[in-house]
Length: 274
Image (cartoon, rainbow, N blue to C red; front, side):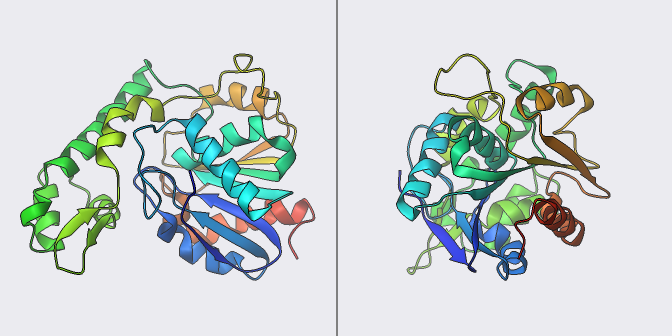
């Protein structure tokens, strides 16, 4: 699949993959800070933003979308960074195409397969509530974003979460609304989003991944837990874990200055930052 992307800056390629329900827009402020040093590339993942829709939404499919982006843009020795779903996609890419990367940065997600686990069931229930709430919105007769927000508030209490989700509500030139998200595909593939790496099951994947890797965890988030550290070390033996104080799952949005410092220090220590 050929993905929509935004691009800014020059230098070493830095590809940033957004998370579930997100889009490239979410990373523009971070990209502006990094652009003086890097050629920052922000794709919209499949079924998100301005990229095409498809019924498949697996990490294998998303990995191959990114592989096509790398091929089309002739990217080599790139830094790949991903948040949440984008972080897992980045890990799937790294075990299949490690020769394309110089560094890997994974933001608030672990490589574990969470399907059929208590933690995974909790995440799946949260995602199911979100997707069902969005699907229930009568967007054909919707008059305003405020009306959509009021309707969502019945099932999604957090205003920042509602504002984040409603970025996906696109107003057409005729005044009607449509979703940028492919909600049907996401609804049918929620368990796939909880999938993880399975060393030894795919002969084309290369374990362990020996490129320098940074895992970033939000202090208040539960997406990387102590029980994940062994699997992280096994797959990414040259990895370090940095905890951002006062941040939840959306680390880059909640503590942008700390986030940028950790990312810049990691890259600078590995002699890429110019």
